[in-house]
Image (cartoon, rainbow, N blue to C red; front, side, top):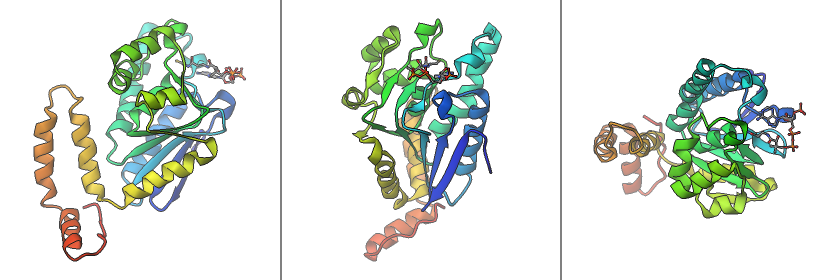
Length: 260
Ligand code: COA
């Protein structure tokens, strides 16, 4: 599929999706949100993809937020719809994808940009990255999950401070708070993400999908993460990947997982 605002490439089961609006610092307009949703759905249903890397074009920004120009004149109703549609079509989709999504945060990740990075399963930042939720400086609140996901990642106190002050966190501070897993030079950013992705591709896609589901369950209302773990653990035993993984170990060879 070809996209207006995205670049998509694939190598060795690792798909890289690049938001490509560098002249607007990769801000998320409606069209880009729809395309990201399409690209993630396509990756999710393609057996030839095991890991997704999400990044922004250029050297300045991952994503500088939702497109302010687009929503500046919205009514309350339109604002609520924008938020709901975004949650459902992109941010929840990324978080619940059955394949790991790694955010390569290559510069500003602000507002919807940080919210997008936080919906990914793993974040790696370049040393020039700046992260924040500056919405209150625009007279609005984070609307793509920021009020929920930021406190989970950095703790409520730091999240409160970041959101109330509309401040930007530098990459090394983000590393200290666990908001990102690694900080590397911009030059090494994608290769670092690829190295993590390559380690993931050696493992069972079926088990990884179940792991994502189980870890996410602890944050979902009405679900008991421990119960979900027990059930998903049990289901693994009737899969090809489980038979292959255990047999390969006993036969002292590398497993050839099919994801089934
Ligand atoms: N929505 C729409 N356009 C955006 C944008 C956003 N979130 N962020 C940046 N842009 C556009 C700018 O309007 C500018 O477009 P123009 O050249 O047509 O005027 C272009 O991207 C470059 O941005 P600019 O502000 O000139 O770059 P800068 O280096 O001076 O500042 C930022 C960089 C990130 C500090 C600044 O762009 C900014 O504060 N952006 C908004 C961040 C934000 O509040 N995000 C949350 C939105 S809810």
